[in-house]
Length: 297
Image 1 (cartoon, rainbow, N blue to C red):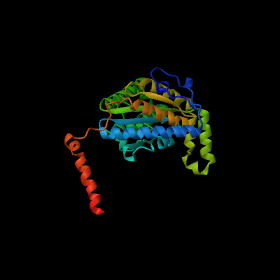
Image 2 (spheres, one colour):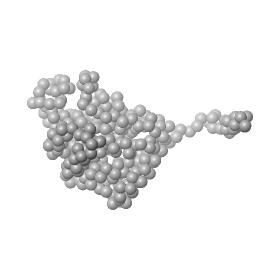
Image 3 (cartoon, one colour):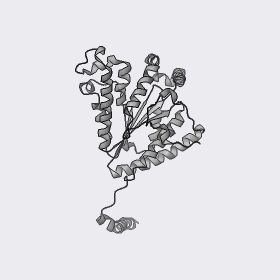
Image 4 (spheres, rainbow, N blue to C red):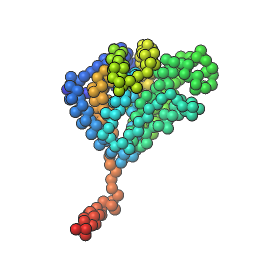
C-alpha cells in the first residue's frame, strides 16, 4: 500500500481542480484499505479520549463535496470507534426561518465543538459561497441590507464573504479549535454511476431526487466556485485538503490518516496529572476497594 503524505493533499498554493486526480486507490485492495482504516480509527479514538481529559482543544472537521461524494458514509466509517459522546455531527440543510433571522454564520458559530470534542460539519458554512453563488437568488432570503435583487450582488460581495469566513475561522482557531476542511473531489463520471446505483437499488431510491439531475447540469459552475472558495480560504490555521473521492474506501483512509497525522503534533495534549494528595494515597484507595471484595467473600 502506498504511504499517505499529508502534504500531498494540503492546499498551500493556488490550485486548479481539473489538474488534481479524483481517483487514488493507494495501490491497495478494498480489504486492505478497510483494515488500515480500522487502525487509524483506534488511534483517533485514543487521541480523542486524551483530548477530552486535557480539555483545552476542540476539533472541527468540515466536509464538502458534490452530491454522492460519500460524505455520509465517510463520517460513519471514520468516526464510529470514537466515543459517541465525543463526536457531534451537524448536517446543515436549507436555513430555517429562525436561522434566516440571524447572519449566515450564526448557526455555525453555535455548532463549534466544545473543548475535548469533535464537531463534524456535513456540508458547512462554505455553502454560503457555493450554493448561494450558483443560485444567487437564494441570498434574497437572508434580507441583507442593500441586496434587493440579484443585480445588487457584486463580485466584491463574494470577496467580503471569503474575508468573513477567514475571520470566523481565525477567531475559532485562536480560541482552541483545531480546524480541518476536506473537499471530496469526485469525477462527474463517478457521480453518474452513483446516481444510477441509487435508481437501480430499490433500498437506495429514497436518496434520489430529480433535483440532483438539475444540479448536475451546473457541474462546471460548482467546480469553479469550489476552486475559488478553496483558493481564497486555505490558511495555515484552517487548511483545505483535496481528497480524491472516486474510491470511497481510499478517501476514508486518506482523510483519517491526515487527521491523525496532524493531531499527533499537538504534543501538549496529555492526560492531566493527578492531584498530589490523591496520588499519595492511591495505595490506600486500592486497599479499601480490595478489602470490600474480601468482606463479601
